[in-house]
Length: 305
Image 1: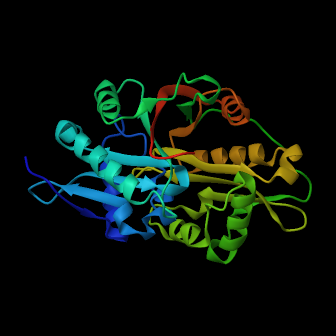
Image 2 (image 1 turned 90 degrees about the horizontal axis):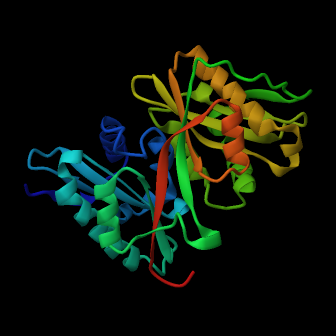
Image 3 (image 1 turned 45 degrees about the vertical axis):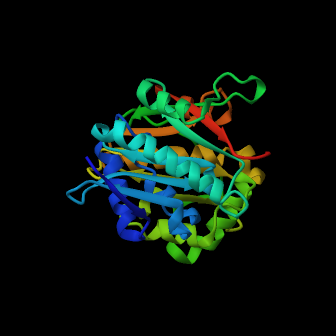
């Protein structure tokens, strides 16, 4: 079956891309958090994404080089994997080389894949990607965790003077960006990125939570994204400013988010994190999340790190 392809065309494509990934939950790690990821500034250059269409004009696959995350994200219908997975990886290889010395480029790109996806793994290895699960001290793998939303949520007292509330829309976007940059020690999050995410149709304002300190500063955040049917949610991102970590405000924000998800009838909550037992893993585990999928990280180098 012949396919046509083209670069990214803006907001209508974002919705198409999200819908395709959502249709195949067992095959696509990137699903519920796509409103967040597809709002990133990597797509300010339309050539950093590619969409493939079948003869009927239906979207069959897409791929993006996500500069802020150093990842190649993609999704496709399972019945076109044999035909399009090699094309996706060939497109990504060409694009990664073309942008290497630009603000969008990186010396290495990573792909996340479920451990059971043998065919996809063979394709990645044939294209020159290598698994990072056992490479010494820099080994890297991830997990997908899930909790039943109806489980009791551990009670964590909101510190005196602090307030947990939804972000005050676009008027508070700049303050959120400053907090996000501080938490992750990176300038990757930008105001246009956050504004696009705030305007995404799938966003639910009550699930874009922040914790305000007694002096009014934003101290922590927890954002959740809902599936189309409202039965599933994903936590992404979650963070707390270093000045407030002794008050466990990240834990407070997550607990409050889980309570709100219960209130609106969500059944399952998922989150993706690194597989080693660091602070994030232990936090999610303490909140009742359990590992449901192992996620392997594959890497391909394009220059010196």
